[in-house]
Image (tube, rainbow, N blue to C red; front, top):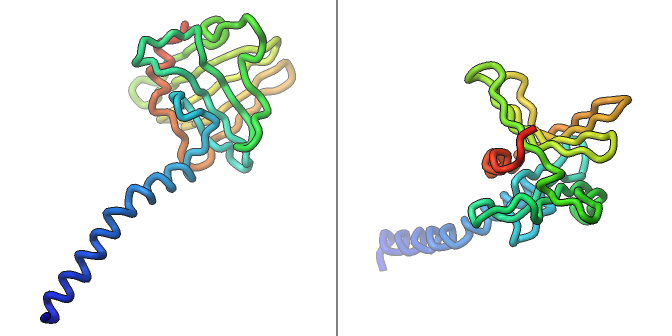
Length: 172
């Protein structure tokens, strides 16, 4: 066997190994970048790790493509990946369609777009917001009588399906 033939075989083996491993690497990276509380059979409408924390905020629910009923299955989950501290809505008889509101704004012309899912528990308002353009913010927030708190996402957040959900929810 010539040197050229040996080299071709060696590189063909490398190429095969790379082709086999690339999907595994991509999936591992995706998991590391975007932790989520959503189950495999749910759509992740929003998920991110909170900056400076190990906590994750996720909005999970059924697919809107398959006849989405906003009154069933949509949940906000917050906490460490191993233990969810807060699940909303958390009270019996509350339908998510009565709990969650959508908001789609373009307040400064084409340069800024804001998509939010809003919900209230007692006197505390919560929100998931993706604001792109001027004053970019991707994260979650909470407002009560005393203060307004914002927690931006660290790294890459998952929100590819958020706009579709926002437009299906009752508007604020």
